[in-house]
Amino acid sequence: MAERRRWLNARGAAFLIAAALLVYLVVMGGRAITMISSGQPVFLALGLAILVFPVLGAVLVADQLRFGASTERLARRLHDADELPDVSHLPTRPSGRVEREAADAWFDEKQAELEAAPQDWRRWFALAQAYDLAGDRNRGRKAMRRAIDLERADR
Image (cartoon, rainbow, N blue to C red; front, side, top):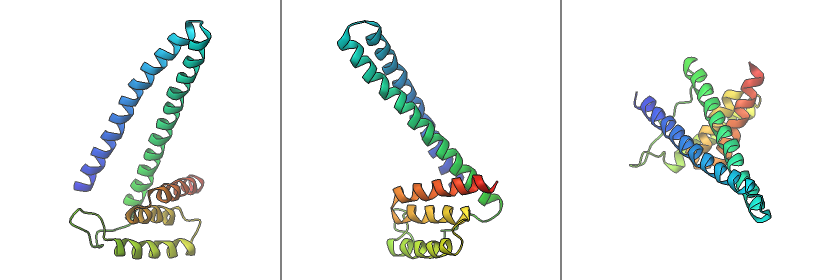
């Protein structure tokens, strides 16, 4: 239950941040359009430059929300099949983070499982979680994107 509550808080925070960014993007977009419509060359150039940021921001936010929803869908599938990787047995620090040695050992185990079945999205999901526990978020996100792609092809 606590895990579910933490997920809801993380999900709510993500949507709150996305909403705040959307307000910012609308305001900046409005300013950009005002500058562009002034007709003065300097303001036209600045307005076009400012307009790029809200568009880029909207694309990035949409991508991250899609990534989060896809990750959630995979986790739900694994949970429903009772195949969600279990890390509850790993020793933790007082902060709640898994101890480094245990995270590294769990990572090695998940990497070996992946090498045995490299096209299994479940193995990539577990590897992404192992990267996260080891503190390598960038590689974890790449592994999760691979899991998402393989799961889509598997459906």
